Length: 285
Ligand code: NAP
Image: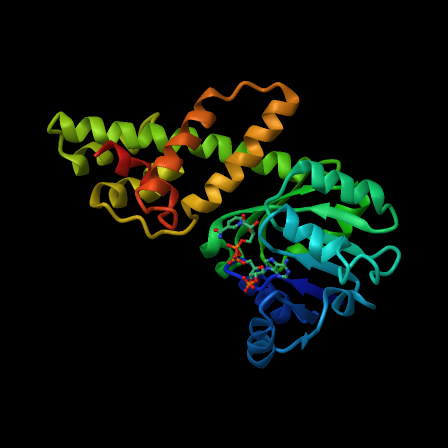
């Protein structure tokens, strides 16, 4: 087991770091609001550090799970960032959902570091249970070296391709989810307008060609108007922003994802930014 600098002890990062501590890694901790690092250390061990640079010094790997592109830039190449002190050959594993451009440019400008963009799917529940799906971009050697670390909280760890390809895979994941959730919301809305019993409907079509993870896990709660089940609309809009920017650059045509992004903007205007993504049905009521 090695020494890991872990940055970003939020909804996702806290349980990931907890799994790393249980696996026997020595953790050097940094979080923007310092009290989280101290609380974590008191509960699970590890050393709170004053800066990311201090945390990364002597570490075998720097792992980040922060918010957006600016946060990742700050904790890596910012004034007190980790890259200045990370040893040659050490790993940088980023679990934040950010642009593929940033992942590529960090890897290209720091070839002495084994950079792996490793966004995750599975939400808070997946992080807590150590059952995340992890989409990796980076050299084969870097992803191979990162894999034993990622196994502490990853159920499925797949190298998609070179740097940036983990983020591109996460974008494809969000495109697929956006369309499925809107389709499910429309099916349930239509059934309600037509006077069809929703329980009988879900029982019947949930086993057929319309079956999906969203159908299995969200259809009944959507009917009940319950939208407190993890991945929030605000985060989905951030992700769809990354998707649409990437599509503008690569020429992909994403009419449904663009439309659903606007529907999520409607949900935000209705005060639902912290609702989970199944809340698309709210604007059809
Ligand atoms: P979160 O709860 O807001 O946690 C982010 C953590 O990073 C916070 O503890 C925050 O510190 C810290 N942080 C942010 N910027 C920082 C900086 N510049 N320097 C140091 N620490 C910083 O967010 P999350 O839900 O864990 O999400 C983290 C990433 O995973 C995001 O990119 C998100 O899109 C992605 N993701 C989330 C989910 C999900 O279900 N939540 C699922 C898949 C992927 P403070 O305590 O100061 O805020």
